[in-house]
Image (cartoon, rainbow, N blue to C red):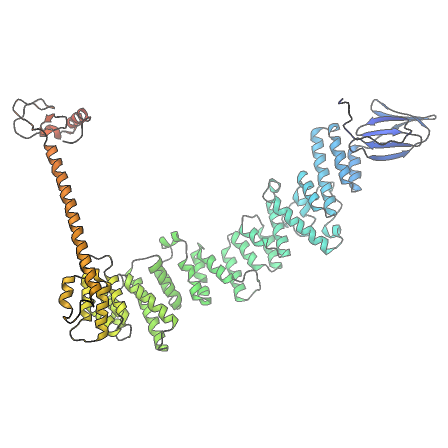
Length: 630
């Protein structure tokens, strides 16, 4: 109809006598043969020997061929039989082309069923030839029940599966062994393909109705191949059947994965039992080299307190400092509820000193729980550990130094521990810095400064003491501490040059912290002005600065006072005249005494009328345009 053929030409012999159309074929007769060409791909499909033919025509849908001696009818095989024959000879492309071409000659519903089956059969043919990409597309297009494919692999379908293969069968293979003829390399490729295919279809509509079969088969393939995706499957949403999967994982010695399977199915006790056996070496599984840390993390977020207590001893025996994390790193909301009593935890940690210290640090320093017994307990533990280390070695090792810093920080920052109790324990030891901190907490600053200056001879620490003890305090308190330190340095009973130099350095470095007039009374007359020049310069500068700031503040206060006076004059405004002729705007009665309420609009009312809420709201509404002030 377009004037040009839409198909490629059919190649006939030169002496064609007759031709006829028998969809989807063109049949031609020559001197010796009848040839059959497909209209779909223009290829010759069949040749029939036929001599002395004279006529070949289509009579009402029947192809008639005649010789001088007889008349014959050419009867085509049914299309379905033709397609099956093509598939049987593994001519997949031709079968699919023929099936598509037959669409118009077959009812729609019947065609769809037939075509899907043909696609599935074609998929298995491609699969048997290890053409996996082509097979995958054919399986998808044909909406293959994936269990047909799984059933080729021995033992992959769960024992509880009710699947029965399609009848008539989609392929000729009993199982994968027959298909690959025992070739291990081919078998491995087939299993790798099934892994990929199942992983793709498990989250699509194809898996609806039999997700258990798919996920269980996938788990078995992963376990057998020692595939890294096995763990990913088990820690994400899955439908693996517990009985089948557990037996398979145990068979392949995937005990860590088996624990994950138990956990996913709510059997945490069984999971932990397995994992503990792995760590203890009772069973072998090298999946995770950090399995102990994994168990600690698992118990940390485990909501079953009985399990946590059951395995707490085990994790602490393995490693105190790591094991205590099952208590210190629990979810915040659970800690806030105190679902596990901190006192019970501390009692259970009595056998594990390092873990006990870690847990108390967690309560005091991280959660900032303000309970005296926790703060005192932690300080005592620090102190005992330090004294124990000092009894072993005279030199401060790294561990001792670290503990000393922790103890000092706690003593400085906390106000909740029992000061006298700790001080009694320190008496008689060489922990002078700690004693000074405790005296500072008792406000006995002279004792503290005496220790720092005369026993430790740590002048820098003495200055730091004054600074941190006066944090968040007023200026007079800060000045009092620095004057105390200066007095300790300049004690008349001492003539140590080091103390004199310390006093000079203190004054020159912290000039702003001193009352210059008091300092000049304290320092010896023999000191030169040049020696104290930085202090004096700073003191003078500070004095001038203070004077100027005071003058500025005074000027601002005077200006503010002037503004208020101006406002007061404005508020007085014009005089208010009250006479016995004036009447109340509410009750309309005259005023009998010089007490009244005036609204901004100038109206005056009795005091008792203004107090009446109903009447008051009426007048306020009347005068709301001006102001609500009286």
